[in-house]
Image (cartoon, rainbow, N blue to C red):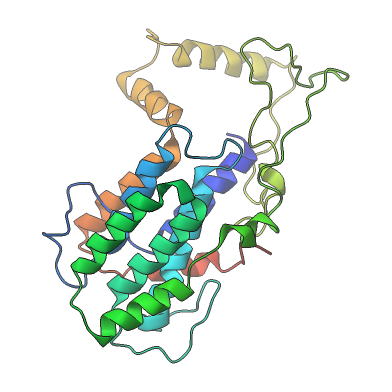
Length: 289
C-alpha cells in the first residue's frame, strides 16, 4: 500500500473515534434519547455523498471529508460535555445541559454544506429531520448555536494542507517515470501529492511507511510478483476462499467499509454521542498546520 494512502486511512480511523458511527439499520424513530444516532445519520449521509458519481473532487481523497466532519462534531460535543481536550476549536462557558445531539447535527450539517454545496437541499432536509427529533427549548437552541460555531470551512484547510488539488506532472524523460502514452492510464493520476499533505492524526505522512520493495532483479521481487499474480488474478485457482475474500475487500473503496465496520461496532456496544470521543486524543495535531 502506498504510504500516502496508508496515512490517509490511519487518519480516518483515528478521527472516526471522535464521534460514534453506526449501522444502516438504525432510524430516528428507534433511537433512545442521548444515543449516537445523530452522528450515525450524518455519517451515513456522507457515505451516500462520496458514493455519488462526480460528487467527490477527483484529486481530494474522501477520507479528508470524513475526518473534517467528525472532528467538527467532536469539538461541538466536547464543548458541551467538557471532559476532553478540544481537537481544534475551544468554546468556553457552554451550558452542560445543551443538547449534544443538536450540536452534532448542526456541526455536521454546516460542514457538509461547505464541503458539498450542491447537496444543500438534501442536507437541509436531513437537518430538519434531525432537529425535529429533539425537544424544543433553550438546550436545543444552545446546542444548535454551538454546532454552527464549530463548522469547518473547507477554505481553512484548502489553503494550508498541501494543495490537495495539485496534480502530478507527467514526463517520459527519465526511466520509470510515468508516460502519457501508458496504456489504460488516466491523463493525470490522482493523490500523488498526498505525501505532502499535513496529516490529521499522524506526526508526518511517512510515519508508518513501509521500506522500499526489493530490487527488480532480485529473487525476492520475482517470488513476490509471482505470488501476487497467482493469488490476485480473477478466479484464481491457487487462492483459498479467505484469500479471495480478502482480495475483494481491499479492492474496494476501503474507507467506506471502515466506516460501516465502525458503525456496526458502535451499535453493538450501545454507545452514546459522547462515549467514544477519548479516541480522538490520539489526533491532537492540527490538520491545517
